[in-house]
Image (cartoon, rainbow, N blue to C red):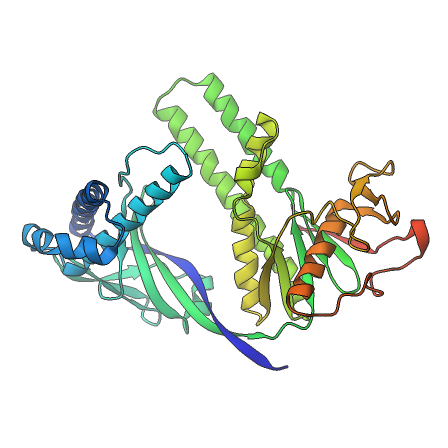
Length: 401
């Protein structure tokens, strides 16, 4: 099939450093302290002079910082300027939106690295890193999943210090050729499932994300209620927070792999553009909290890069009314007496599960965007006639099969 579009796929890959000597750890500790001081100085300068340009911030501060930190490789000052500008611009953006935001300050044990400061060698299993004490050759723990990135291009990176050790997170990129879309698969994301609208059937993948998030939310609430503020309470909250994050990351990859298995024989995948959706959430306090904890964008990002690595296009459509308009006649949908998640059209009496309707409308909108002919109803979808029309739904569990 003709391939017409080239696009760059970027991923951040983690490398844990090993066999570090005590002297190397001490040098890294001093580097983090120095870098944090420089970034905070630059943030204060940007805040006082309203600087949002990297080039201006660097031009007005570089020579002074270079004199005061002569032992530091110059590109650490470049990346500190990038970090400071990004933090200050984020602060300004939040302030413009009316959100409470304290004066920006950089507290993390993170150092940004550009391609001059480090070099990654997959074959030999080491990273060369420039430091105030010279250029170190650092070994990292080689993981099985690292092998698939050997032919990818190396970009920016971050040196990170955690209680588990020192890591270098590297941005890797690869050019892919995306097939020109002829048809799309609509993907509707929900708290507990992902529904796919394929040309001949609907597939619903049970994710259990709501149950996982609720379980950890209750655990944290109990800890906060029973324990007083202190190191033990903080450690427990952090422990369960990391467990939840790891479980959800694993879940998202499992869900994305199942989606790719279903859609790889087609040309395109359609997702909802949910940018700013949290600003539109105005329900009860419990519902608002639950929906704000739902990491839909994290799942979308994983789906997007996995789909693009299969040479498939990904498009985002307007999510407005995808679950409240009839995919056949465009009429308004109302709750049906046949089930709390079943909707019925007031015009044509079409009836279906709301997730099926959502994924179907997403698919139809993507087809319209790309000029694909959209009939009033896709004949391949319909398996019956009249009010009793049923649609084939293949249910799959994210953890089984």
